[in-house]
Length: 294
Image (cartoon, rainbow, N blue to C red; front, side, top):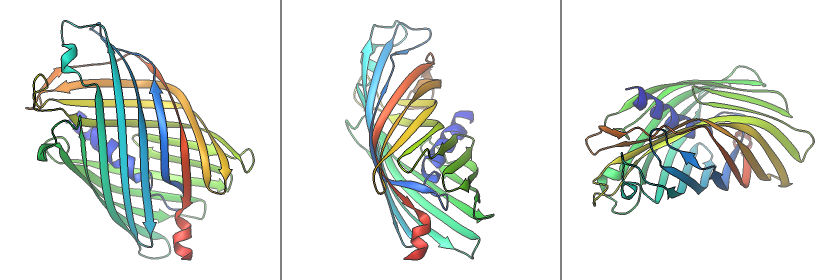
């Protein structure tokens, strides 16, 4: 149950992060990331991974449409007596589509409801078992012009049975040049403007998915549960208007890569040593307040 709750929190936070009112949010981004070589405890296995993230979010009046894609390549090294190299995928992919609504209940209260079907697997033989569904409802409260609060709940059926998760967070902008946001239990973001072009800061983010592998041997429909907590400095550079180039690097301080069989029994616990990451990409930003002006 602990892992189900953790993954449900990750699932909800990935999408809730675009829902806070009065936040300059990314409506389009494409970035490349690379991780240092992972060392798996209790095995001789090592792996280097790199990949691509892409995201599209379209706020149209009170309707929100979105799509997310992640591609991750693995380069495995050495062998292990506990798990065969052939049991490990060279590539994992995740794609998700979403539809939702953001309703103004009154001057202070908004209600966000989203539904998000997706696929997370090695994309070798896609079946109905590769699909998952996420959904949530969140109340957004404007405490003041500077502070917004958020609370609600969500669930995902990605882990065999629906897993609920509470959602709690805030976004604080004491000035137009400073932003602090927190999503309990998994996201922290702080940034400030040096000038109109440079926005440094720090971010912590818990990321993870459950990927279903092919029914073919040697995978036999097993699943990989991946979780990582990233923490480090960020720098956003305005290119023109609302188009930014962003770079981020830092430490991966919580790092798991577990393998479960098709009956959801863990067959390998792949705790990894602390690692580093780096990523860079292009971002186009939009303020939800602009919706109210249209």
